[in-house]
Image 1 (cartoon, rainbow over the protein chains, first blue to last red):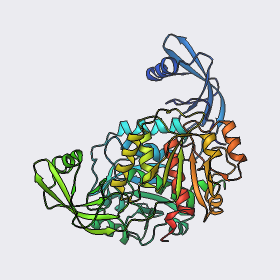
Image 2 (tube, rainbow over the protein chains, first blue to last red):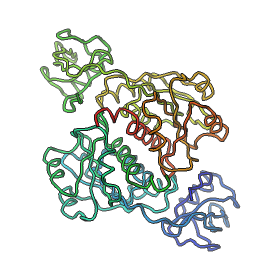
Image 3 (tube, rainbow over the protein chains, first blue to last red):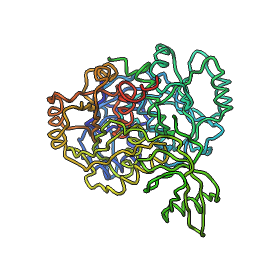
Length: 248
Length: 248
């Protein structure tokens, strides 16, 4: 079932079941009652990453205090998408966007990777987690992607689960179109690796290409910024061998 | 020939030919000499949207004054991409990103369209033009997309060039995958229309679907923000029937 995009959607860090009232956190109460000016009795959607998506009624037993009463299951909890999105963190101001896009495009795991040209090596996991939840709220994603600890590229490759194939975006490909290459990976469990602004170093590219579980893909004839490459690569992967094909 | 991504690339609003020195504008001089601290004799790339891309030498005949001497043609001027990118302007702070992405992804014309749910109706064409040039500099795009005047959706459809097919992104499609639909449009001249946050109204969707030159495509099973939808749709179109297939 597709997401309802008329009602406001809210993440709650509590079990959800019919009739079991949930006290909204202070910030959420402020957001619902003061920012959105929602009235008691109004409906919204709740999810917690485990219990599916619930239609709920807003109540406000005291001023500035919101309580959410789950009414009915709207969408069952789907399995987490089986796509590991690995990316070199780009500079602040674009990083939030990149994380948001990974959630929207169906990443199951969000894995920051430090490469030679990675500019942003000081990550704030709490902030990243907040971006992930916000994107899930915004876009109706119920299976919240897992945020993995940042790792060096070498370590990522060393510890890579060999039952999973890793696709990386390489500017130096012999073709422009990833479709034919991706079609050979249909049915495989996949990871996707997007480099930093400036791309991978020659060493890194060589290391990656030498791994039997790694495949390089091109992303068209133009140079793409890292954030564009992320969305373009996620689109290509989802379209050719991912969950865009489940209902086609 | 693919773009050189080692050298700094600069747009100049002047004819470029070998040996004909070009005085950099004041802001550009500041950028090259003070921000980037480039030394006289350093090389960079110049383009003007007409004469291809030139390797050039920086000179600085006076303090804070840069002059650029074109040395050699690096890439011939390509034809403008034949893709009309129509989009409902989203809120400031995300709009620049959307314009930048359209340039990177190979739009030939960038056409703002006012729809019923369009939030941002006050556009600054000078700013948009600056974003376009900046994205072209950054991403090695030599054929600078044309920025069209904003138009209402009804007018866009009324004056639409009927030799061109218009693809629009519709959340209410019966499938999730645009590949099969796009494959039927291979070889057609194309326009792409991306709606605002909140999507098209039911009326607009009905009007669009009734036009013989319009085809709706889905963009996967998740709700996408308008800026994500733009990049995802451009990727799908370029991959299945656009210029990602020229060298495949």
